[in-house]
Length: 165
Image (tube, rainbow, N blue to C red; front, side):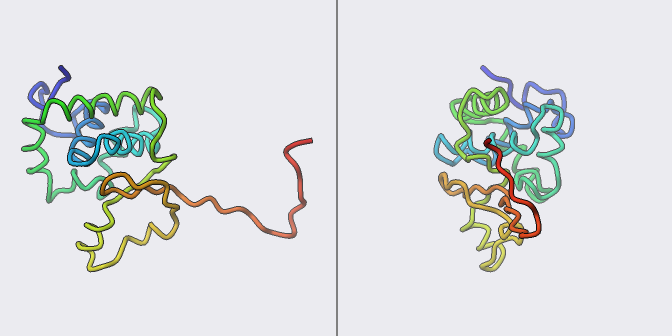
C-alpha cells in the first residue's frame, strides 16, 4: 500500500515531499481519465521539472495545475483523504515511472495540457493565449497535450551547414 494524505504530518501541499505532491496532482487531475491519462499527466509534470527537487515548484506554480488553485484546495483535500485505492496505486506507479523513465512518454514531450471543452466553457468559448505558441502532441481522454513549437531559423543571411559530413 502506498502512503496517502492520512499518513502525512501536514495537510499543506507546500510541506509534502515532491513525489507525494506529484502523485496527489496526478490523482486530482486525472482520476476520472482513462488509465493512460495518469501517466500522461505525470509525464507533463516531469517534462517541466526535469529533476526531483523542482517538482513542488512546478506543481505549485500559481494557475499551472488547477487542482491547487485556491478556489479548489478544500475540495482537493477532501478527495485526497479517501482516494480509490486502485486509482491511487496507478497514480503512484505513473509518477514513479515518469521520474525513473520506466515507461515511454504518451504525450511525446508535452509540457502543458488542458481539458479544452471545459476551458472553453469557463472562458466563454476561448482558449488561453499560451496555446498559440504550442503544438498539440496528444489527446488522451478529456485532456489535450501540448509542447512548445520549435521554430526553425530561415534567415538567408546565415551560412548553410551540414551536421553530417
